[in-house]
Image (cartoon, rainbow, N blue to C red):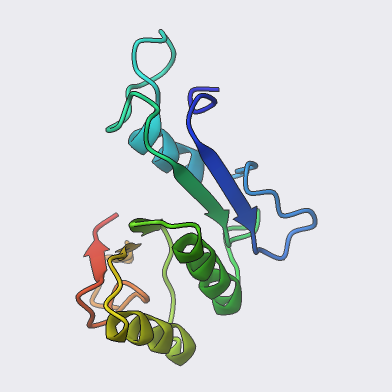
Length: 145
């Protein structure tokens, strides 16, 4: 409701049936989108970083209702975001290393992309590497969550 006046688009690549990008059973993606784009001055909820509704936002859902998914689904969502014109792609997810995903990031670097990927560093409380956040790339930013 707080995002309805924004320029929204999206797609779902998870294995849920249906996998609707606008449904968030875990409320995490909705929270992230609200932090970025919640409209200001409407008396509802919080105010986002860009609160005037003027920035387009493309939402992808790569993880299912259980919070899990596949690297192929994540990769397709990343590609969809780039194709949609994203300049910043937020990924609140992580897992083991994927060579296919690493190759995609390297290929984007080689083409001189202007997209920045922001990925979760993980919250295991140890020195476990979380990917894609741990990829050594100037277009990948790792953030604590």
